[in-house]
Length: 239
Image (cartoon, rainbow, N blue to C red):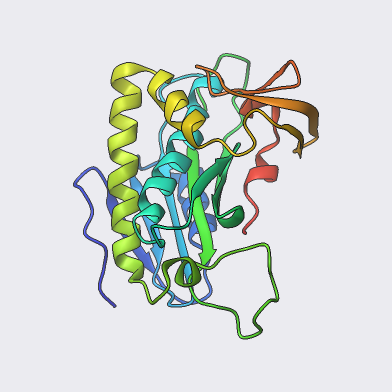
């Protein structure tokens, strides 16, 4: 299979079989952090990838990287989906196409020893179906990328595009802070201005979705929800 062509900021590790790319990246993180390691499982039925990062800031700032990654997913996957299908983002980690889930980002991190400490590592990942399931209609609330694209897709090119967009948005985040990330999110934020119910990782809120603030928190029903309030396992399940 053709391998993705990535910018030099990444080190590519290709795995095969049933081994989970996200789990493999976490194994690396717990033994030796290699910033920019991108693990890709070259399966034909699913797109499985993960990026290992070595943070440089305390947890609330470090976790802004998930919002950056999801924004990159939206840009990259939007380049493959049919132009007529609207794309949106659901906080904190879901890409929607025409109101249905297309991709769900995964994220886990090393718990810092004390508040304000820098986490030793952060892993961001993606596990999504590429092709239509053998039983049409089995998951009517979700897209496959093949379905949203209206035809076959090349996994290596998708990974390459995700890597490029993530690098571009990360560079902007580092240069300008989170404000441009928040603006881009708010342009695509699912449910903005409407009453929604949110529940994830032991945190629940309901009310009008006002947007994403300049620290990456969701403003809903007069509350500000930060990713650091969630448990890592609530964001690390496969889609």
